Length: 429
Image (cartoon, rainbow, N blue to C red; front, side):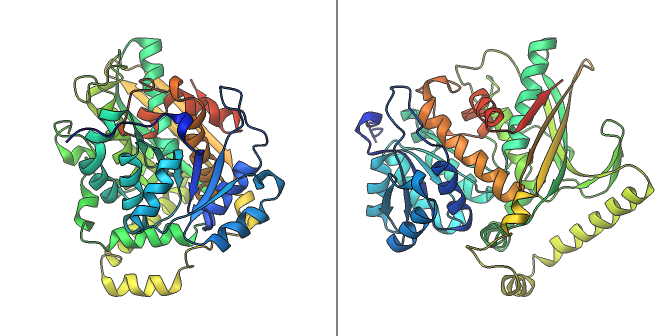
């Protein structure tokens, strides 16, 4: 089967289309783009963008609510299961940014349309089994035509993935050595929106639930680092001398660790064989793990222990369909989320420590104000889309590189620079 020919960017009506724009995070992406002002592309013309979703009335209401900055934005109507409408959408866009979850229910046809029409794509999913299916279906075709399909561009999993990549690249630049081990600790304050909870419940209760325990779920064939038990998710509390704090299991680690491991595989020439990688960044037995940080002292240790026990119990309970049904009734519905005050006063901090086989150490920190699951996620995914729309030639591998990628392998330093410019603190020792 011949690879579809990728249409020229100049033939597209829009540079970026925001799909799911009437949802909770979707409305925030529209507001983010509306505040950009008169953004120019490299050719000196203004950025062209549009809102997309299944209801024209809701999209027009969101556009109006975002004020003058959104008045020139287009509106594209396409239901998540209307394949002709989705293909029409993809054919008009250089980049599609999707916030319409659960993605396993509402994202597959949209990604397929983007691959068919050579349209770059980013989203905020944390649904690893769904992405595993996308890799099997679309990676080869997207790679052959230079189309970048990049899930996990929100708080799942930009801090973990970019932070690990920065540690590894700095280790190579400063010491000429690959990272053998990276660990990360998270501190965060914020709420959860209904869409995120719906996505979590959907993939926890799906037929692919058993896949979640595979530490190499997203890795390319032949890139697993045995034994798998050494990469198993954290379940017990531990005091860490590098962080000088008690650590416990991090609720997002079963997502983020898989993404970082895929990046390590894609960015290792002997495995993924990308032509743009010239130095070995990750060691043969590379390991990555992450934790929730509780602080030092006995009280923090007790909190880490209690949290670990509670998380283990809740994970067991959520395997039961009856418990999930009760949770569905009690949780906020899709389209709802934390208050403006709560989102504005949230924050996150991710600290990473990387070591080489020879004992060299590199540390990094990523931090930002704003609720991580909403404000920070909005910034991350919008800037990811703008990397593709405005700086495609500067991205890793250049214009011709594609596939089912990760934030680090597909966006790299360009995203780091854009996030710094947007106010995120990103530091490397």
